[in-house]
Image (cartoon, rainbow, N blue to C red; front, side, top):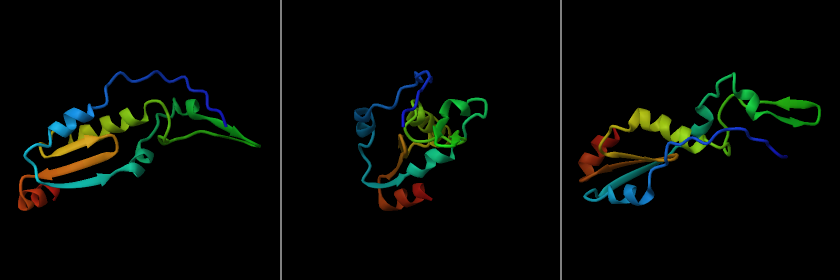
Length: 113
């Protein structure tokens, strides 16, 4: 199966992992949430879904939700989660992972809830 992709690469950078790690200083309690299935929750604009089409014997398919592996999927998902959680000081987002932090267990639990 070969997919021809005409998508332009999004210029929004993925956060630098070293910067993300440095921002964890001072926190002692962490919870990680894996949003891997979340990619499939991002709708593709119907005018663009033809760009994801592929043909199998007797059928042609188009994605209506963002699949893994397309050019801008990681950045698009990162941007969507940042739009929701980006301003929370005790939360870090990296691709499909959310890290919730606290200086103490009580603060961590409060941040988590």
